[in-house]
Image 1 (spheres, helix red, strand yellow):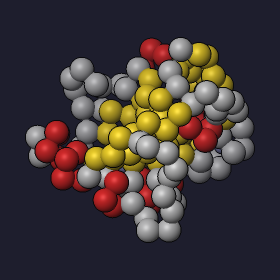
Image 2 (image 1 turned 90 degrees about the horizontal axis):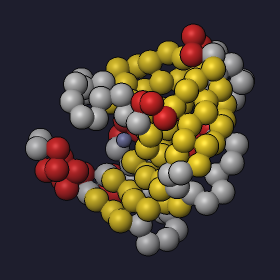
Image 3 (image 1 turned 120 degrees about the vertical axis):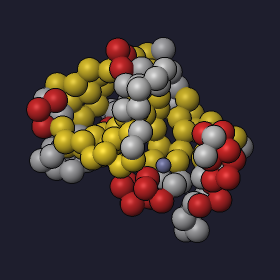
Length: 140
Ligand SMILES: [Zn+2]
Ligand SMILES: [Zn+2]
């Protein structure tokens, strides 16, 4: 685990988080629309993340179980956060791109891989799951 810091494009929101180094990509339609490509994120429990300038964060409830936080001044996507009550509530999936230092981070998994945009493919041997596999795991 390593403490990393970062900020949105305009600097109104700063984040500090204690993180592992495993990055996951999500190729679902919502992440594509939100990011313009795919969401590369790194997981962190609520108590491992702190924000400076939190008053500049807006959240969009993109599903009944999660919201997406962004800087309301510059629009940078900051995180996907679980809102559903239960063991994962408050868990953040922080956008990797907001961090100043991504040394040592490694892309290990991709979900909704069969939905990925046809214009690119990440290199490396990642663990890939299709939409059907993800939905089956969620019980949906
Ligand atoms: Zn900003
Ligand atoms: Zn997604």
